[in-house]
Image 1 (spheres, rainbow, N blue to C red):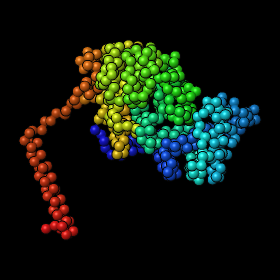
Image 2: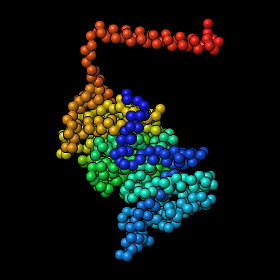
Image 3: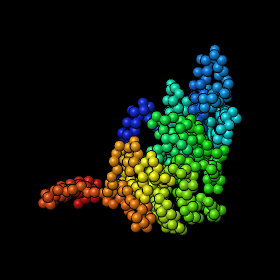
Image 4: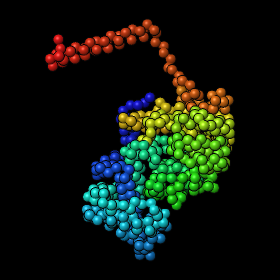
Length: 529
């Protein structure tokens, strides 16, 4: 497995930095400085303090951009203090008492917390889509006001000298970087709101949501939507080419998502409040073209007893002690007739026969819904070391845009991919991601994919339904892809043995030399003979 030093990842990030023209090290330096101000505050609590300020800085910067334009056009009747002049361009109206230029000079005042709370309340009052979203507890006694002021001064450095898209890009990337770092700091709790970017990138690039309705019923902080919009823009599309629908049960995470999407300028329907997708579906009639999701793994307390006869369980009633296949069927229920879904599940979902899970998996296979299975390497998540897999389900495998894939499933074993970025976390490189994505697109027959598909022993295999039946409907890629092809060894046995013996003698000589050195050192300390 490519578990080398983090230098490989650093080189890749440096390359990304050069390509974008923006200093990627800025986010890390900013987070390190902000983290020093955290003192003894819990990361989960501090997260809302910092991200709320970054959001406030973003909407204030965007407001100032438009304000400057309106001032220049004042002679033509433009009114810089008319909220409609901003909302018409999808820019939040920021009242005077909430503007960064008004707040920053007060950063060193003991009452800065009260100023911030009033600012957040004023913004929510004038922007209905932000009602109940912004943090409003900066004035609490437990929050060190000196450090809060220092944090304001620090965040003031973001976006200075940048205009429009570049400023928004930097602020958005800072926000995303901070989300990932807080997820790491919070450990298991962090997984509730953040999915590793490399996983999101694979899901998005494999499904290719260029136009249509995109849905995530457990959207966390909205990473799937952000990556989808990025994917579209990189291919010449624009914001608004997709309609975004989401839902999140955790109230604080729901607020994070609303802020994250607002920073990116993404208009999303996440409902008027947080809600449980199983028990209060906020989009009951939605039939999405793409469903992307990272549901909670192996959730045992999901209220199954109240949903025994639910219409979503077309392929079998999910077990009460594990929501995995409840999520799978919820995704399918919300797919359009030609829709596809890609989602993350724990590896057990590929092989478990507990409480009828095997029968549900069998029904999905026999209905010819399973399109592709990807086994992922471990240590990708901040929240768990549980190995995960990616499922891809297609309603219509004879979709005219692609090759007829009826009766076939693609298996990809990516467990040996990845590079360690620290002692406990792994990341997939762009090369890894491209290999997985290109393999799927070539197998699916995408017109834009120039590569021709072929089975690669140890990595990918296109299997038919009979093969899956012979494996009792177990969908673990390792069962299908086989072993890697070994390079032919044409070195004569005699030459090989000479080389091995020479290497052994060399290692023995080094060991003897080391023993002599150790004995000498011990003798110098009075412990040798």
